[in-house]
Length: 351
Image 1 (tube, rainbow, N blue to C red):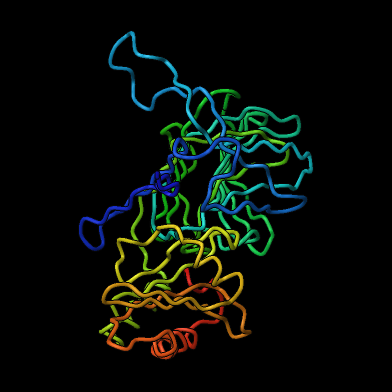
Image 2 (image 1 turned 120 degrees about the vertical axis):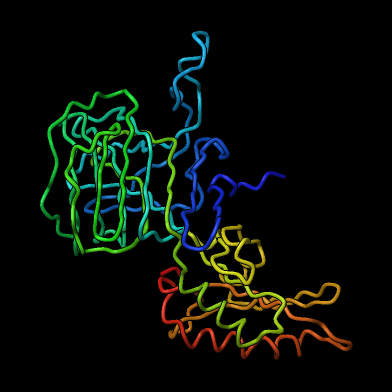
């Protein structure tokens, strides 16, 4: 069976400190559904957008090698289809799988419709719906703009007037390095390099305004990997308990039924989807026990200070003659309690 999370892309580490890459291949996904691993939300007023994977004609990224090569191919793209005419209405689709500090984001977009607005853009270094940077292109207003939102207040709008034809695919690039921000449209740096210290890291996402119907494809992030607090927690816990065969943390990516492995003793496993057992642990707060040849697994809820379940932790230990479910849970419980003592919220896990 094909793993439906493969579309999230392959993360490759050559040597510590070098860049990694994540591609968003929408061709791996079912049509007419939102992409997993993302969270649909809204900044400003009204309701979230209607984000779905649809088919559209897309020209190749590279020039054709022969005159007979197809000019366009029909491919899966990401579309925002809601047509809410509320003015201060900014649908956002946030990727919850990673927090980015220094990165380069490339994507292609096409404005398709809208009577009030015809905009497409990307939000980045997103903390929440009231704190983020955005760069967007408007076909209706013929403009390319950058601004930041801090505590729900929009800052100074920066960028030139430029023709951005509707119904045509354009390329958008954002590059962040420290407090330096570069924004390019179709390979041209139309906005001078910006310096801003408001946000040093955050999520990335697709962005539109009002009733804009916009498409996105060929999205890719090249970035300097950051170690989440969850991974720090796993690494330090394994150091304290060196006999553990494995330790994993699963957390929701938007809904309790969509889980990702966000931290693991084996870092190559990070990004894999959670299973029904982990989902059940988070939804019902129950404990699961499993036994295999030479090992036992205990899956327990990780709770915040209020006792609410924020993640599921799988503790994998060596088994021994006479191993029972009861003593396996007894062995795992101190490990879970030590991790919980260092956590205050689910948001902290991915920071």
